[in-house]
Image (cartoon, rainbow, N blue to C red; front, side, top):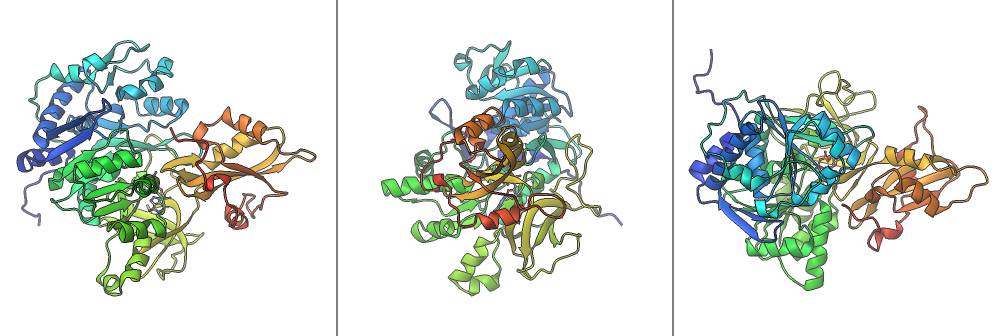
Length: 549
Ligand code: ADP
């Protein structure tokens, strides 16, 4: 027997239609690159998204085709989040920190038809102009009179494009499993891997985010986590669903700017990686200012330090929420929902639970397995490989044949090492994947090692991530030198500089006699990490030389 309910697919524009009809007075406030603050309400967003859908059609973007965005968190980026999926196309959020080579790769691989770009990122496209010949248009997110001069032909201004269009458009009735968004993850070595989000996964995760972060309609939400990264953890979509005021910070993510925006817009909830919170703390400490409206802060993307959670709770009266997720899980895979047992056990038990990465969100199953895939007991002590399955978990990468990350029985292997306990609390203890996460962005240790091996004095190289107070982790390069060679740091750094982005450069180089090699011939990074457990990066007490960007 079939259920006799009406059958409405879970589509991204349905969030916007809902917000337009039910949350008409709710504001979206954006700090613009132009320097001012832009405000409008959900019906304005909906109207302009419909104009944009017409514009995309006029530019020749068809159903199933992809449009790239290289943009900060702002209202125009939000319009793209709705317009592209709503007319059957797919938004492809591009990380502006990609190298020129990776940028050209993802644009070509996703077959972007049009790229929407913030004016300040236009030079990135100019640098790869010869590889953009397939694009139908490049659109700069600005007014006509702010359109920068460019060596690229036929660059359009976003506002002129919209102004020419009708605001009448009927969102398509699509299958909810159709693609709505793409985000590439560039963790390990090799080319970035594309994760393709369905409408259904985005809508369900927008709901999960509401539940997992205990958001409500009285909240004012500031996602600092970028919209080019994992759908800003689907927080912008949750705002439409709930009718919460949304505050979008643009490019200024330093402590002073974030604090000013939080105070002026009465922000109650915000989300970001530990690095942004550390920058906010530094600012507050220097100025003696307080957080007068913020009630909850979500920390994710890297492990939160206990001191960070305690600073939020004890010094600023803000509830810290520590969550875990990946590009491959659409947004959160585990959320910081506390059990009544933990709450009644007192403050320290609550803090212990908050230090975990939370518990599986509805629709996601977590398991921890040993080396041979055997289940590991959920006793909070036995660790193993964290695997996940669920309605918002990738089943394969875009246009890639290998399925190394998936088990034969359909679980995605996260590359994280973890424990689970009897109540479902997840604790990440290590990382099996060979990457370093600096300020929320990946550095491939394998690529760095290969670059180091290009130096004539380096016989063997291994890179490990070391704790860093500002960037969470920074790379330490450990080398074995050829016999008779003496380490010439500047020369090794020069070799690396020719091959990797500046912010990837290791914060230090250490020489060892030999690297620990395991039975399969691989460097045992866990042993190296133990060996260097007491080592402190020279940059750990001062600012690192390599700035992100
Ligand atoms: P995200 O933006 O959610 O970090 P990525 O795909 O870039 O997405 O990175 C996912 C990886 O980041 C995880 O597999 C894990 O290694 C790390 N990570 C994410 N959240 C946490 C967390 N709360 N604690 C520790 N590591 C985390």
